[in-house]
Image (cartoon, rainbow over all chains, first blue to last red; front, side, top):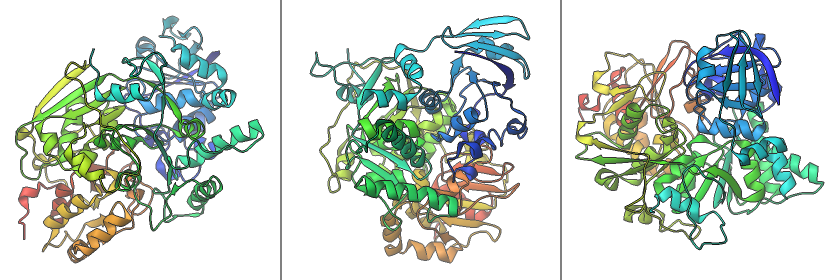
Length: 162
Length: 432
């Protein structure tokens, strides 16, 4: 899977309350959630994000609540991929389970600025910063997780297994 | 090689045909059988929709893997705050009836899930548990492996009774020394998170031990494990002892098994704390790790105090708060909200006369709900307002307006602060 898009850069500990505030959790409609995506950290995000754009963040992205509404709102907003130094554990598995690609790569994060054009090859685990003309390699997913992703997410995998 | 309690529990829940008691290793990806799973009115509607999408794909109705091992607890927006939340809760109610799920809790029997399920004897030592709520790690206080997941994991678990895990490395936290007056489990965990940071235990298990932990009550142990997630931890866990077994002896709904770490178990890190150096703590905005002693807060005026939640809404917490508030009036500029975490705690607190103390001091008493903790309802903050809260998170906008502030503290610090109208060490209050 390949993605190309503009980078949205954030810092450490971007949390689920910022990604999708609880005041909107009385619904689970992805479209409604996407309208408020990242609202409490970047009010311009939901209005300006374009299909294929990539979120870049530093340590512990997605910390806090288990709410799957967070990766759902990001995916529905059109984001193709998230690159961070590290992800919070529940966000990490939620993203994999719903088929939102994520990569851990400190070097790519360090160099990327907001607006840089990034290209990601998920199966190879490679990232190119086309604006800066730099190339990076991240660790590939373990085989079991690659199976989940290639099945189209956890529920597709479950559906096949029963 | 020895194993930690977390590794032993996970090993016991993995089927490996070649060995009676298989080994598991940190970093290994496993599929574990689950003893209990749960969801709430925020997370379960998505899980139910995913469950039904599999039914649609298969063209047949599916049962949940075990009707007595699933709990659905509508505790965040109940009594329903608006039409949308009523619709969300109805999804849980309808699904529970259709699938004849035994542990659906309607208001009147409902409580804040992580206080309710241990109280009901539904989560037990040695269990492997997932819940679609990040504070599911609370049940580690009973010696269970218990971790928060999202809705899709819950959906898959409702069908198969299994979940995938990466076996975590464990950090051992050893607490020694004599606790200072007013210092409780909340102060210990806030201090620990302050020490290691909000990602200090990322992807890892947090094992709490030492003489101080043995001396803690069960409510204090629940509080500590509850906040493991605030350090990024996969689970928090405490080896079961006599207090644990006493806690469950009249309520356990199933058999259980006690596991303990081997003396030669391997740890990623061991951290020791001399608790005699720890004073009542406060986490300043906007991270649980921004901790300092309450006595060092420099005249921080507040508008609201919340005492409740899955972290500190148990009977012991209300007793401590009442002990400080007795005979005092809260500051005229303060709104004090007390939330007994379950219907039983509510009834017990009322019978003990705690409600008289809260009401006479100027506080209000709410039905059990998670509402204010996450800025949902029953105590949302306006722009610029500050709250001292016994809840677990103080991220930007957590309890309301993006420019409001939450300060995390124990029930003692919260009650003392309600009297003074500013962040206060309980030592400042004259006990009547």
